[in-house]
Structure formats: C-alpha cells, structure tokens
Length: 340
Image (tube, rainbow, N blue to C red; front, side):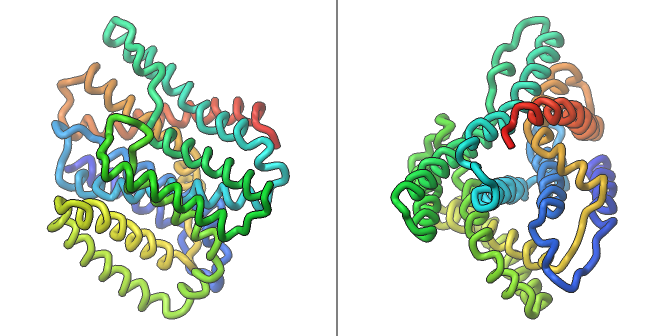
C-alpha cells in the first residue's frame, strides 16, 4: 500500500494546484476542464488493472471507480462529437478520416512497441500484441458509426434534433441491454454494457448544458451534500446487491455511476481547475489508457520477482514514459493527416 499512498499523495497537489472558485460557469466543460479530467480518469484506470498478485486494498478501492472513469471518457467523447457537429464546417465530410486517424494512430504505435519489446523478452514473436485493439475503441467506433449514419439521415430527411437524439440514445441503450441480457462477453460488439452509458450522458449534457448549469448554480452546496449522500447510499446498496440479477448488478451500478458523475459535475460547475502538469497528463491520457495493459504484461513477463510496491511503481512510471513518447510522435503524424 506504500506506493499507492505515495502515488495518491503526489496526485493530490497536482490536481489541487490552480483550483479556484469562479463567479460564473464559463470554465465548465471547456477543453481545459475535460483535458484535466481525462488525465485523472486514466490514472484511476491503471490501478484497476494491477494483477491480483501485486494488488492491495487501497489500490483496489481506488480502482473500483474505474468504471466511472471510463464512463466519463465516453461522456466527453459524445459531448465533443456533438459540439464539433454543430461548430465545425464539413465535420461529417471528414468525419471518418479524422476519427480513424486520431483513434488508431496511437494504437498502431503502441502495438508496435508492445510487439517488439515483449517479443524480445520472450525471444519469440508474440503476434497478438501487434493486432490487439482495445474494447473501448471498438465501442467508440460503434457509436461513431451510429452517429454518422443517424446524422446523415437526419440531414437528408430533415429529422428534428429531438428525433436524432432519441435514435442515438436508443442505439446505446439497446446494445448495452442486449450485452447484459445475453452475456456475450467474448464478442467485442457486446462489451462495456455499463460504461457505454457515458455516451448518453455526454449527448444529454451537451444538449441541456445551460439548463443543467442554471440548476447546479443555485444552492450548490446543498445539492452537493444531497448528491454525496445519495452516492454513499447507492454505493452501500451496490455492495450488498451487486450480485442480484439486473436490478443490482446492472441497473443499480448504472444509477450509482450517474450519481457520482452528477456529484462531480455539480461540485465543479463554478470551479476552475488544472495546471500545466495536470493538463499534460490529460493530453497523454489516451495513450496512458492504451499502453498500461502492455506495460503490466511486460513487467509480469520480464520481472516476475517484483514485489507489490515495485510492480505498481514501475507500472505507473513505465506507462507515463511510453505514453509521453507515443503522444509526441502521434501529435506530429495526426497533425499532418487530419483534415481541418
């Protein structure tokens, strides 16, 4: 637990430096807001994937919020897509080129690094690291497909924004529900039945941002206390009923995620936060998310005798180093290939 405590103790000032209360809501869900938030979420996700052999209670407790962190990743993505559709000329025209370049370029680079390093350590070619694609990317590309088709059809047949939103929400809910009911966990199409609800929250937040802020800005402290109490009650309830079919392990988990995210959004509706370091961590968050599993696998193979403190420390440091290198390379490549 020592390394986990040190890690959290370092993160705390990183994310507290620069925080200030604002008189308005102008900072809420700006690029700096979401970038800083993504960095924190990516670091939480690292902790949830620490193998059982090297885990501890504190790391496991923090990692238990990883599904909320991934939900927030989806939420930010859906929000950004809606914003870009409304504010960027020819967004749909270059949609697939820009999406595929942005999403897949980091995967290709990280997969090559993973393939070369692990193959060298094992002294044999481990091909699966070369073509592996994270389930998060598959789910996001699924939504991109629905988004593109529904927006295109909506434009062609002059559908109302309300109808388009309902179709997008329905597509996410349907896949999530089918995923849970059929429990087809070996097919990537049917994964992330809880986390993908973030796509719905992102769309709704974008569409009703002004109404949400108007509500959150009044009696904010009271609402924060109420949402905190609700989150605690739901959290305790989930621990007790998480093995109850549908109502506990599915519905209650989704509602708990909503409560925690709502608590954070209301708490930060008039807060400005972030600094150069926290935003830098946010900039490399996508690469952190993609590379940490490879780093964990590499350490398990190359250094199996590590103790828990060493394993967690090496995982975090190694992931950040590889992510920083990959991001710098990706930034140059994507900048040349993306359409304005």
